[in-house]
Image (cartoon, rainbow, N blue to C red; front, side):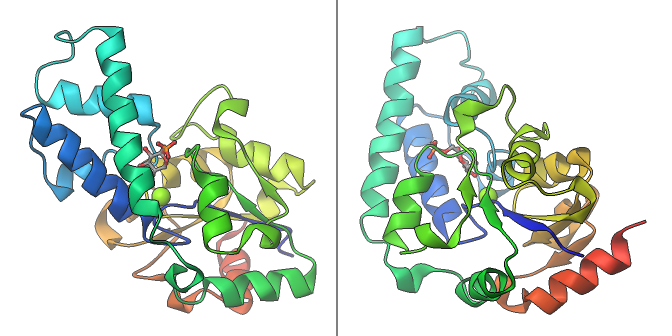
Length: 224
Ligand code: G6P
Ligand code: MG
């Protein structure tokens, strides 16, 4: 039976993946490195520092700036991102998420956050969801980010769940890879092609269909 559900945050619990995109795009344009949504898929699930490195590489500028300048760019992006978070309210929680969390709570199945974001606690507070999660993995507490499995493995460990009895839910290709390399069942949220290619067991176009019975069925059908 299902022992834990390990959620990504941005783009799974709420639409903050879009805020990251807006903030990175603005920074990119200020550095003369424009990019589109397709490139942005490669930034999802990736830490602030590594995302900046990917953008600079896209512009052929990875060796142009000093460490201090890069730090300033990452800081500027985060300031913009955090200013966008100010408008977040509980109504911004994606459809079906609060209901699923309530079902999990009622069944005693822990819900965990495994996000690369240092802003996760603030977002959960703004959505008034912080009490719904048994554990929030801090991204700096594990050696490797996604696509490595570390964040998901730590999440399962913290709540004492067996890996084969965990489901991970992700909107990022790097995140799906992380869940699969942890050995868990992976549910992708978003565009089917990219998420399937990354190894998702099931892809849903949005969070509406997520329910405890759907998760239990998915675990049964995809475990071996
Ligand atoms: C998540 C998002 C990424 C973001 C990363 C770090 O993984 O999908 O887009 O870069 O968190 O977020 P932070 O809020 O710490 O900059
Ligand atoms: Mg995400």
